[in-house]
Image (tube, rainbow, N blue to C red; front, top):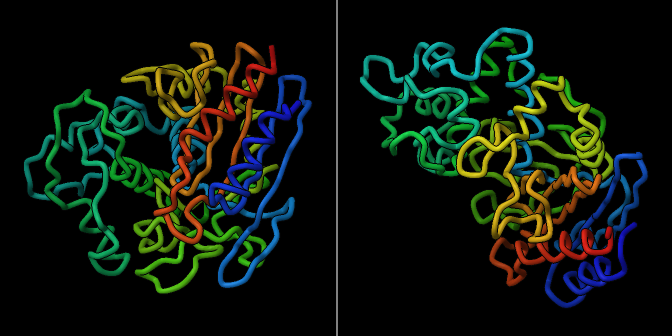
Length: 333
């Protein structure tokens, strides 16, 4: 099921292009699958091998696999609507300020069309309590609604909405097997030698803002094994990830090639150029990704720690992702 050409590309990335380690898996609609792992869980401070139970920092795969999915589950329960204004669930947002952010909707946050900036160094603001308060009160400079700006800030606010609706912190939410917010460090792939934290990161989120908020936020903090993420891919492929209506909403393109949870196939996207119009997927900064091709009945997951020991390596992870997708789909026929 995994073509030799795909294996060769991954081998070259590890042996010649500086990639530390990779775990790759494929699954089809019949439930048949195959996996391939190579490289190392860590090279620094000492070499550590990968195994089938290695936890990977999923980075922005947190957005679709946790935050967007949980928002849609709340919608299924009738506790909120996607077109609710943000202020309906965060009444203390921009307290005693006039801002258009109050009227921006949950749908706009999910599709990255709320006009929020992409990122801000929240981890420099102070402790977690201060960051949480300032996130709601910061006078964000907004773009016009509708323009797609991929924004961690929007998903940070969605995480806050989830905590308010459920009445518990994100860390207390239930997760499927193979997903966790608290991985075993001894069985986790290392990410960066972090200049701010002064250590090689293993078993703690690579994302600075999520770490400053206690390790879990709406945009990052989720860890997964290859088997765990493949289970998510299988659920998406077989349309058992949410209710039929909610899953259709999660995967249907809405704005700028984005659905409520994923990125639709389009020129230059991470899944490669051989995907059909219904294909979708998502990636994470640490080197992770999940893709689903419904027309060919195939889904695949590539988990890497391409930021180890530094995010400033020479590997072109986007080119590798596209090449993997193209060789896999070409062999599928």
